[in-house]
Length: 443
Ligand code: SAM
Ligand code: SF4
Image 1 (cartoon, rainbow, N blue to C red):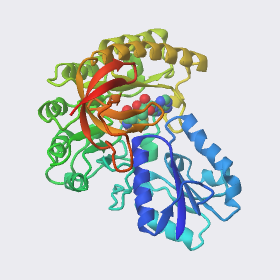
Image 2 (image 1 turned 30 degrees about the vertical axis):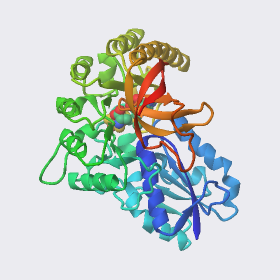
Image 3 (image 1 turned 180 degrees about the horizontal axis):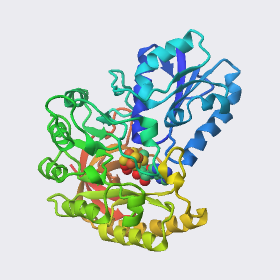
């Protein structure tokens, strides 16, 4: 039996790609192990969205370099593989396999080449119409599952490597997506998350030609699925029909992640985001007027080249207006091949840090206010696990807020008695900026 170890860096798309890689390897007779030392094949599924993420992978390769001498095969998958290509062999000569995510359909072939003694194998083609659609997915959770609906990205945001690392957009047929969703429901999964770099530009390639809102709505009608999430949305392609679907269909979670990146029109324009502040705010308006209480979350980049103090203040004003439920803040990081490299007015690192901290502090008080609204109310949670350190069950609301709770009536967790995967109504008794806490469960 051949053994493999895999470590994943980066976003949900990478986490799900790894589930497919693991499934493919298990099907080929490999056995997964949890340490590099015990593995014959060591894989890193990598992220290159920011420089730090990329450096982590090279650090890891360096850390285990000695193991290569013991006959182990090292492989680099994902975005750094696609971006750096054969240069990886120069930077880390003990690596034998370099494959970008658009080449994973060829993974079984590449593995055979490695097994038959090929020293160096690459899969770097981006001109594929394939999606990495495999029947052999090994899922990390028995309750919640990812489903890829669209791969790649056709936008050209000035700071972003994704179009270079994941190739052009390819949508899966709605029939194939719904088939996967139905079979997950039959296996007992009750929550699915539809994935893509820009799910809103989903277009069914079959004659039905469904758009994203239709696909979302139909997924939410599958018997057995109680929660359907989706990420990520691009504001330019985000239509009101998505909000209408959420309002109509309780199975669709009332949470939208809508990355704004900046509150300044000048910066949005230089970022090539294809919308302005007012376009964005009209989408926020739809959500605020919705029947359901929709949580809005976002991504913001601070210190994009040329971002002035006035631009940054526009972002501060925007976050006060929207009142986001959660936010991921990133300091702009220069990425290879991207058009933002041509800008000359780069912001010093200390200034990026100052803006990062200011934004973080302001958002923290907004989240405190947002979360305090739930104290005294019952929230429906999907139970994800148990925290031994705090003696609390871990749950998530439809809005994707963590709600940690205890109840003397509940069984202590054991192999036979777990609440994982169950849906419960929990009374919220406390709120903090990043989570809610509850103390009793409505049986
Ligand atoms: N496709 C999604 C979108 O359009 O928002 C997600 C792209 S990326 C995986 C997630 C986030 O990383 C982006 O929304 C952006 O805020 C951030 N990001 C991307 N490139 C970056 C860069 N060069 N420097 C800093 N942050 C970056
Ligand atoms: Fe990157 Fe923009 Fe595509 Fe998102 S939409 S993946 S930020 S290029």
